[in-house]
Image 1 (cartoon, protein in one colour):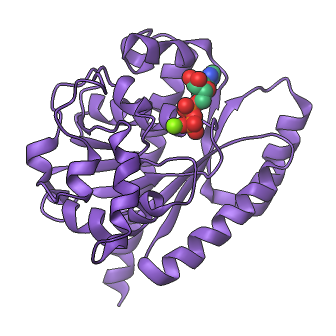
Image 2 (image 1 turned 45 degrees about the vertical axis):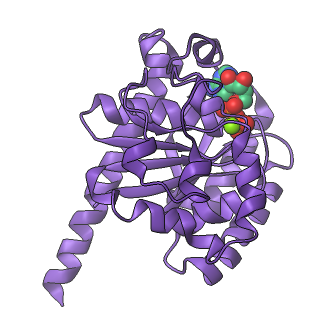
Amino acid sequence: MGKVIAIANQKGGVGKTTTCINLAASMAATKRKVLVIDLDPQGNATMASGIDKYQVASTAYDLLVDELPVEQIVERETSGGYHLIAANGDVTAAEIRLMEVFAREVRLRTALAPVREHYDYIFIDCPPSLNLLTVNAMSAADSVLVPMQCEYFALEGLTALVDTISKLAAVVNPSLKIEGILRTMFDHRNRLSNEVSDQLKGHFGDKVYRTVIPRNVRLAEAPSFGSPAMYYDKSSQGAKAYLALAGEMLRRSEHQATATDNAEHTV
Ligand code: ADP
Ligand code: MG
């Protein structure tokens, strides 16, 4: 059964979309079956996957509002080797239309149920706000991956986000977990970044990924070529860092699976 991971942070520009498409491409490169759901009306994940958001036949709007099946709207030919549910400006309308419908918080969860087992990983790229689209992502997800920049006040924002996630989860998805916290656009030479990073580890311990994503110009350039970094410049530090993150994530989940197995044996 596929694991559904929402990539969320209410702040914009922290690396959500970059993480979503580069992690998805790295997972797909390890022969995992991956689906990316672009839930941000800006459609950045869509464009960065080589799909023209102005030309797509259908988007997350059709999934959420018109309840079209995933199989009908999924784009199979992305530059990252994963499947994609696209987004564009129409998805803004979805947020408004959702207000009127029944079970509006769990539309995405219901829509994904029939295809969860077709994928190893489903990554949801959330918009930079805690609106109804993000609530749908949180209720559909098994866990939340939070990308963050190690800068002043970052920890405060993060604590607020984690608090919101747990309140939200209590209502719509009690089993929602924090998948991990990812340090993005990291600069080892910056004293403040290192301080914040240490505080972060002190606060969130093992939840903080060992893999750090460095600030790397290739990661910023690749989307304008409609491509994840590994297919734009595979030797770049950015591409390597996201491959390492995929490896860490796979190792973590194997470790958890073994731990669960052992726990089951002892019962
Ligand atoms: P979000 O989805 O949270 O708004 P993005 O992933 O779009 O954030 O990143 C914001 C901007 O920073 C984009 O222009 C992106 O290309 C750039 N960026 C993201 N991660 C990195 C990185 N590690 N190094 C350099 N630029 C980055
Ligand atoms: Mg984004």
